[in-house]
Length: 272
Image 1 (tube, rainbow, N blue to C red):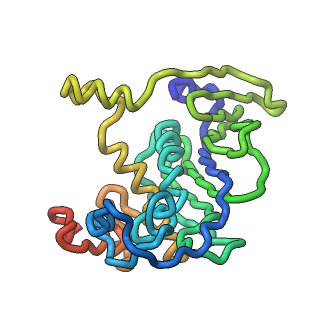
Image 2 (tube, rainbow, N blue to C red):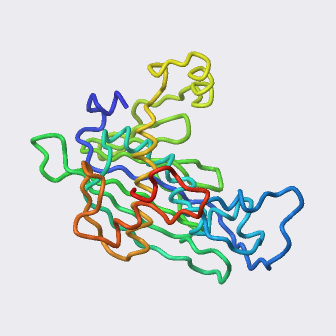
């Protein structure tokens, strides 16, 4: 990130997050008795009561709107967290998202193909065009992008684009490619673990030891919800990042929270 700040790839104009994962059909799962030992009411939490099926449980809960938010929230939150750090942004002023659940007829509700775009005004006076953040989900046969993850079957990571080159960020490493010939530039592999940092902070009880404040998690998670809100409403949304609400869109603002099923209610959640 410091190399980006120092202008390694020039003026940054766009960051893209990728989640290209093989996701086969989840099929149709019949209703069946709740497995022994499962507190199903507790598991559903604030979500509405529905009969137990395997596609509403275990991993496939990710693909049901009552419990999950698709791959934009399952995987994308990690990529967009890194993008936010690289672009030095919090919440956008505009979001749009399109996609769908293609190829399969099954129990999945969330999209398996999705493209979300977020626009931020620039912090630099000389740049009045802003910065674009893009996140894309693909679920099947596709090309690799940005020298990420090859030869892995999945293509997951980030690409930061600048006027003098681009940077790819893949797991715990980065690479840069400079100039029109895309000559290899600085690269490195990092160390360290957020899990280790979490344990250290639990032991020290010192907020200053955190790698990042809890608010950063809020901002990155918000991008996932904003992408899905725009997708589900099928329109571009204007957003006030200070008030943290959509501008002139009551329907979108209703989706800033959820309907909570008692007793699984967030204190004050009714007013959120």
